[in-house]
Image 1 (cartoon, rainbow, N blue to C red):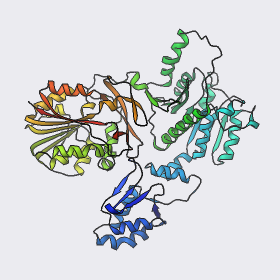
Image 2 (cartoon, rainbow, N blue to C red):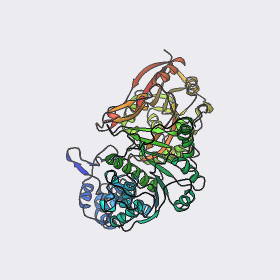
Image 3 (spheres, helix red, strand yellow):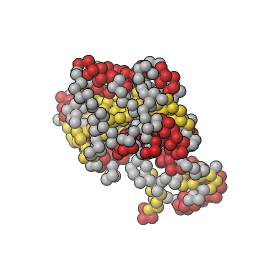
Image 4 (cartoon, one colour):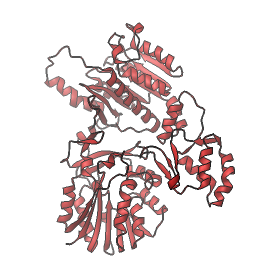
Length: 577
């Protein structure tokens, strides 16, 4: 197959430093330092597509002379998305570039979209725009329902319809317009408004959809979707308004806790039965520009869900302020207190989310991750200040800090409860004793001179028992390095430019965070315990430790939020005064 430079990636050569810089932002930057001469020539030549085997043969000798394997070089360039396989440039070419830049396989993504069926309930100012965007993106089949006619006011809320179509059924005109936009997209219609009487027809019509967009606004819409979920398990994403605010999400399926029916019972049914409606002529506002914002975000989440199976809006709702574009994510699962505060670890569902993180860390923890960029240089500086007879890494993950300790310690022990993390750690080498167990269960045969807990205590309910256990296995005058999520960053609910809004500073308890990959895409959700800095510091002091230092490392990229807001807090303690 032919390969060429990734057309979506700026690539520059910094002559003074002899390095190649690929990408524009912290999420996609890759640097190749000490660039061999043949590599620069190879990349310049790949502005023009060429067969992989031809390139490998052409540069094999040059690479061998500098002790490089050319096939390994080319495969690494492809894996890092610096070089990509070519494809025939079609109507979706720029979308394909976006997928490649996002770390996705463009061919797989486009094939998945082509084979997908998306349902849309309601084709007004939001639903019609969602349909238009999804058809343009290459969705193979759309199923849309609406029983309304186009009226003149619809023309201010969406650009999908035309004056000549006023008085016609929305879904008929939408189908005709989509056929002109993308004739490859099949469109099937159901001429009904969402109602209890017609629900059986909706269930039959949408039963084969991969995801369903709810943009209709009857007061009992959530109740009806709850009933739909009792018959068929289709993920549903809601999009609409709350007063003047735009709403996208939540995405829920039949197994979601809470589900749409629970939300109806809590938010709608109670109001219907305990309040009296005074304004009989209330009409929800609809504003064209905000409709497009909501529709665009909704469409993007649908595309992400179809191509990756993930969305940051699972059981969450995004609220958009049109005045300043601030956003707030409302977490239904957290609000309904479905996580037990009494358990040792927070509930992360049936899937071990740390398995997902281990797979990501294997290739990216020591490359483009925030931990590496923000933390590792400072942590290494602290670790290498001394030499240790014995050192312990608690919650070692893939062993990044264990290997640092191995450089200055006679003996290193590393603990983690996740087998996959430890498997990766062992693959990366070092004279380190890796043990799969929880700290509380660990029985040490010696005291340690240095102990590190990196992003561990925020995953432990009874964290004080961990601190006491650390004290019991630490030598007198021994040091502890404890890294925790920064409490200010964890208290921020939204941001605008270089400012962030803090709304829950004093809250301590379970919170859900979205973990992102090296491209900023959703990786998984992880529940942890939010605690303030004073809580951690005082707990260590109460256990007999004295505070040596506090550090909030800064992200070096001025364009990154971490340059203005600390992501982590690094605490160094000494046992005794």
